[in-house]
Structure formats: structure tokens, C-alpha cells
Image: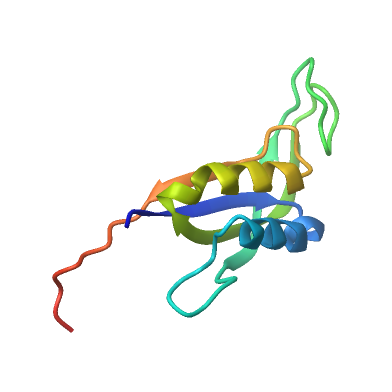
Length: 110
């Protein structure tokens, strides 16, 4: 089955909501484990343009701050549900949610 890695950038005080959303949509299951995720603090910049409704920042002002990067995995078939759940739990107007195909070799000997 084809799997993808899910990458999400989110404010640190919203990580728990994102983890719950991922789990509810079927992400984070690997073998006999669930809620398998990684997260760490990262930094970035953004500038809200006219018409934007920023979670943080002011229109036209270059902002810089920290947030958390959350990573997990899911089956390709779960992508629509995962995307919908993460968007519903995410506070940003334009959240960064990436789905990256994973290569999983099947004929490799230990």
C-alpha cells in the first residue's frame, strides 16, 4: 500500500489539536503502533498581504517567529480525510500541510 509523510507547521499551543486530528483521520498508524509522530520547533517568516486575515501579524509587515513542525504518516487512501481533519483543527488561514510520497522497498533482506 502506498504511504505518504504528512508535514504540518503549526503554533506550539495547537500541537495537541493537530495530533488529535491526525489520529482521528487515520494518520500515525505504523504496524502495531498508533499516534506515531515527530515534532520539533522551527522558525520562519511571513508577510500578510492585503486581503489576508492573519492568525499572527499585520498586513504588509514582514513577521518572524517560531512554530512546531509535526510529521506523521498515513495511507494514500487516507489523505483526503487527513487533510480535512488537519485544516479543521489548524488556526492558520493558509496552513502549510504537505503530503510527500514515501518509497518503501519490499524486497530488501535484513
